[in-house]
Image (cartoon, rainbow, N blue to C red; front, side):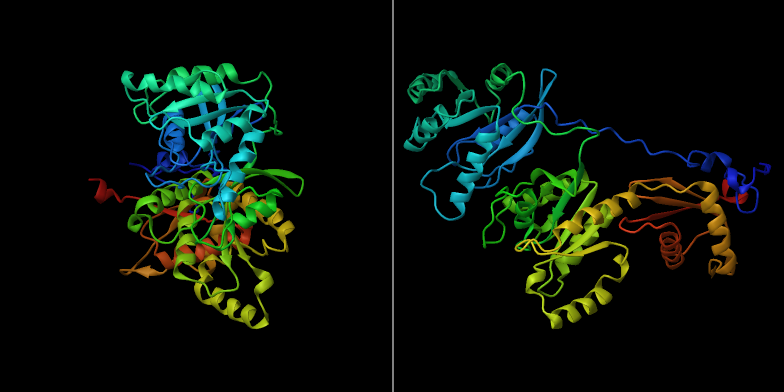
Length: 481
């Protein structure tokens, strides 16, 4: 195969002016990453699913969504916050809000759970009151019905766990709740769920109660960290209300909790997640599913805030969570929380820990905050914007090739096996995260790739975003034969 001369570097030429496999790199030359436009949540009605503990609310939510999204377990009280999911039925989009068990006599953390359910009811356009048909209406169900009758919102009574026709006879007594016709369903088996969704759509008002400014949709931010570092407290401080259940007991949050937050004049979608204790593979039960939801929340986010307890030494779990975010390719902000508890000695110790354990992520945006006092909360928005600008940034192929030509001339790749590899062409193939592709005559060692990544950041300002360096090695003619 003959080598053909290419155009000059500004048009994407190789550093030596030639490249035999033009088709190998042509697809990478100034390719614009395509992203789906996020659908605006403006005008989308909200359905709240409420009821006492362990009547099958989360199972019903999963059935209505058509996917396993909410964490489900036989143990009562798994869902504690109000958790929103996007749903579609017969071409109409709406939001389902799953809630914890509603109990007017609850105390401690469960009183907060009940408060979250009541907030969900107040913000909803329609409400599903879920009752266990096998048990019938309890005193708690009747108390909930009394509150809902005054809510001035459409309320549908769902008689759950009606697995066959024989159980339908027990449904009639739920008329006594005074909320109209009860709808028999089996959340576990799907019986009656389609008819229920039809009724839900009919119950929605023409205009939803709450509207959020649209545009392309708010940027998605995930709050992650190990248990009890203050993620839910941070979300509550940002929202300005008790949006997530907070308790001194670690592991209070199980499902990801999302909220629209106005910060520094811009609306963001923040997602609070379950604290990650250990690797997903070694977690079990509710913790396993919560870990999966947290991992999915990171994948769905654009930028991740890793919250670290600044008052205590860095742990292996902190480092593992940061590594998980980097592997996911999301923009990164590290927020050291509880800064109000950090004295001068602890600050010096923390700096040493960062120099020792986080030397590979010096590029991450860093903010020292206090969810308790609100200290430096205003600095989060600028850090998020800078991280996202890096994540979205694209450098032209001409500039990259001019840059790498200078780098290689000053410090060429190391000799390996008696041969020195030549970098003949480079381009940024993708954004989100930025991906630098090098076309080389041979293997490029990991140390030199890290060197190029560091210089790439310094030269073009990729602070706050991971950068991936990919090497494409040109096959020799003898290898092709």
